[in-house]
Image 1: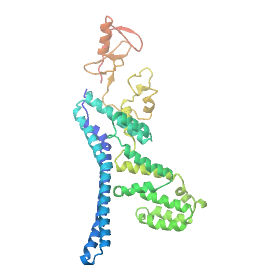
Image 2 (image 1 turned 90 degrees about the horizontal axis):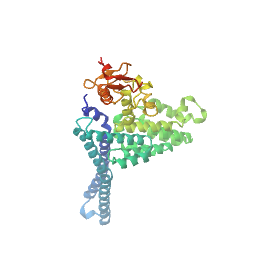
Image 3 (image 1 turned 120 degrees about the horizontal axis):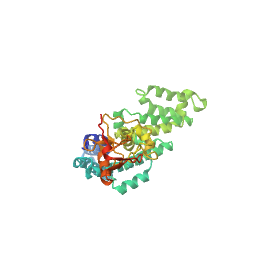
Image 4 (image 1 turned 30 degrees about the vertical axis):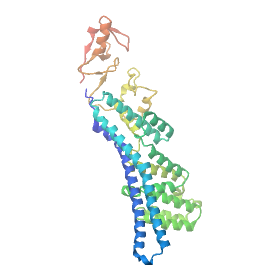
Length: 397
């Protein structure tokens, strides 16, 4: 049986592992670039103004103030860039490096039964459990497991902490934190044609309308929503109509916009925007892996009490078998038969043998029984005893 490690297939599952630190580095690089361009622009402007005036015409006091301002800007820029480098870029680089080394270690695992591969899959499982916990707000559990297993640089605790911060603000019906996140990722969101910022602006506008502040609402509409008319014409028209259709009118056309459930919609929209930005699947890798694994194992025999296998997770009615009810049946082009005595696969080197009562077990299992019991074998299912000579070799078609 071929047990060679499918490296390409494994790597397909691991794209988010590298995408998150990569996108994080890109974001911090863009932020650094913006700070540099803004501060250097101001420094060049001040220097140019200073250079225009003749030396004799310069007021020493004003000149000193300008120079002090330039020095302050340079020192502030240096401090800001050092903070970004120390607290953001360096940790992201360390995470990126360790994740690459983690993936490269797959090359040392030629087959699935090698210790290197087993260790790698154990680490992957731990990563997936941490990822599931982070997605489901089990932050303490995730952090504890990450520390215990030494996975701090292999999991996205900082990203989900940022997600939690924005979502908590939205639950408190505040858009400012989410809008700040949109501003930091404006270029990427625009490239994705994502409308999260528009939905947040629309919600802030709705809140102003509900407070009866018509003048402020009109000003907000002109400043923040009209620019979206080309891509969201219908929603912009509905937003304008809210000025003459307050919640007290109860018009069904606008009831949805006033619905408090819009805040839950914004949380979901934000989460999907983050996942799309970092190329993270909307379903946890643990759930995807379990779904694929349980589907590959699920057979009608798993639900027959007389044929259940203690080593089969689908047959475990109190454990993973409960989850397996939600996945489709497996589809195998080639049959794989497992001996119910040894749990080993029956193949050409260990063919299936049929007892007179119709039960089938592997040749090696029955030979081992016969060697210990003077040529007699006992069917573990029925308790019937037969001579080994009575067994018949079976062929799988």
